[in-house]
Length: 337
Image 1 (cartoon, rainbow, N blue to C red):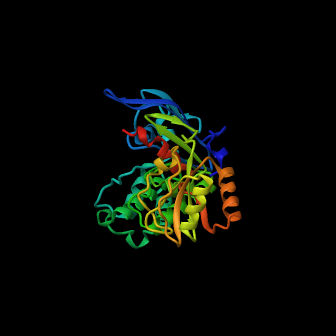
Image 2: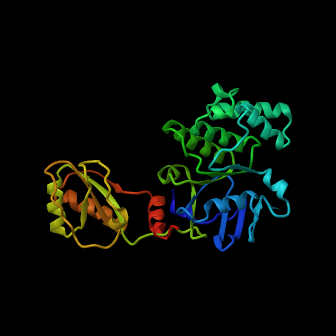
Image 3: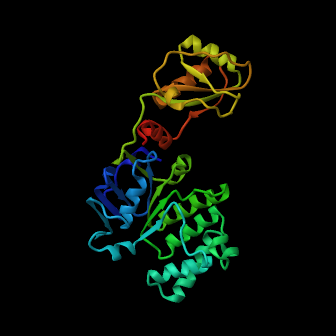
């Protein structure tokens, strides 16, 4: 995801400005603005309680904001609600439908609600059941579906009327690895077809692979610039842990060894790794090992590789320990509610 993609788009399929919403004394959304460009995928990132679902409900027109406005292709959701909602596909985080209806009937029923002709509704249902790999269950009642299968049917339901804007709330929840990969493909295909897609998810590594832009929500306030720390964690894989530790001690480089040996994930706190600290040099094995090191950016990372190779330290893999979305999330996680 390019750094420039984090700026708001100049032209957008959906524009929301200064939205706020309270539930009694609780201010769920304080001041949120968002712009979704046609043909792009945008991530909505924030800790639990930051107001993401409330924001999505206001964008769909299902919840009226206390203040602010939402427009979909120039249609105000407050004053042209029915017309605006016809342009929006909405997939909530929990699938809800009539359990006695078959998968095909669910899609055809929602297609009819959007005033699609019966022949078009049948065609769309058949196409979408194939897209989400539910053809074998097309005539089975939706109550027999697993959690992941219901998620796939929910995605098909959101797309049945060929919307211009698609809003997805935790679409990967309950999906198996193959279905997650297929979801990324479906989302990117939608963008290539000119659809504006907004995805809210805690699966940040997967989000980073599919999105073009990101909006960050913290305590009900949105921003296009991700929060960052002065130092970021990078992961270093080496052939000889003892040699790397000796070299890092000689050059005054603070490192943290990951438990479990080379390539093994550990319970190292990335926030602690990213913070300022003096050099720490745990005893390392005379063999393959993995370390975390705090760096200020790519320039310092390039210098580390150069200096290590010059000193004869064998590095096998080296790169950021966390993606940009993950780092932004960790930076805002202390404010979760």
